[in-house]
Image (cartoon, rainbow, N blue to C red):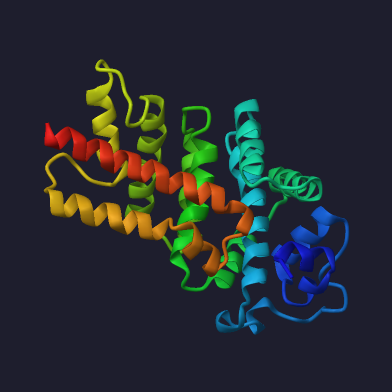
Length: 269
């Protein structure tokens, strides 16, 4: 049975407790914590965390934190709402899943939303699955960058989110730079830019891969392979990424491949 099937059947409630269980339960209109008072999420060791529970935790954390990030500057813009809806569309959620995602997003916008506890449990559920934490951060950064402007309040919150998930500040800054470059790269036309924007496109392509024009071919290829491995859809799903988010991971790998292929073509001239 899929993670969503277990959620609907309420059987997932016996393992997804704590802040994440309460959030998802509220989004669905029932409580997963019923009859489980006194149980601590820490009692469920990382090694015993099954895939369905991690998938449910990822889904819950993604949309609730997305709401928190969107409200960070005090105003939830129409663009940010649209990005959240686009994420839902990419996931091809059914109506019940969309409703739950919207409810989670709205819970995240509330002033009393305890995002720190949510992130602490999410990190615990993911354990050493750092690739999951990375793509989670990428989704949050995409939301914040949706209006082409990263407000100071949003950046401060995202840095705190990253720190709570175990990222060092320099890793967060590297990821932010890569995500910003990825957004600009798409705007320049990807690997099919006009002559007027080719130079700008190439500059952003290097940044998408976390590299500079000074790197050699071997270094470039190594960076490319590392990023492809980190975003491989099947690999991420096996670690706990909801199946519905495979399309997001697939788009990431396509963007990385496009940047790499454009740089190779440019260097071969």
